Length: 347
Picture 1 (cartoon, rainbow, N blue to C red):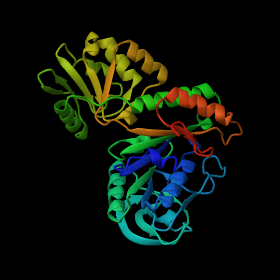
Picture 2: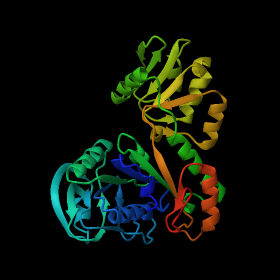
Picture 3: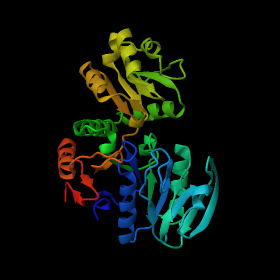
């Protein structure tokens, strides 16, 4: 009971997100499924991409399959549903369409292998999770696909397990530093106070850009994206501005352009929806912090554990115990484990 021990009972949804392809995400997913079965906890299972196939369609290497137990509820596209070895009872055919067909919600009548490919959008994933809970799932697990880290967003899941490993880089120190940076981004504090949080949330939900001053006055910025519009955004920042609300992504160039166009950037806090919208390297993040750039989020991501995979499918790897111990030290006090070694920091 290693992973689920770190899951509070009030979590209704958990996402498992990989730092890179072949970071060990599916192994972690299988461990969660196995532990839930041992605890007699009914679970729901879906994915932001496709998982469970025997052969990786990109690397053409063998992949871990997904094994579920009787009673598990799955939400998956029709094409993958038909490939599942477990016998499934269809509970609902949704109106969510994917390249692999309509998403179907089903309950496993037998143990067996499945492939899963869930909805395409965050809102659909959230609704599917709610449907699976209505069918009896006490915990819904969302499998995050490569380059689809949005499954970590709090609007989709209550908590996130981050899977990292040798597949990120051949350099063990780079893997550790990049994982540390990702955890740091996911831990960015939420905007306060609550009244400004509510204003920022509405602006972001409306997919707009705006500034908020110390008197709570809102000025909308006439742009549809922050990309290549840093200098335009800077034109709206003055000595009375407290917050700059950005509904889209935040990249280094946008901040650099704002810094070059106004000295008032140090007076404000830049606010994005959540850390999955931030695309800033570890080096640039450090430099921006030194220059006094402050960033908050509307929704803080709750990372509850990090798992490590010391092996890469490309024929190289790290000494397992050394990799695990170094990652633990870098991420203290966050629980870090190698599910194959069945070892965890706070055991």
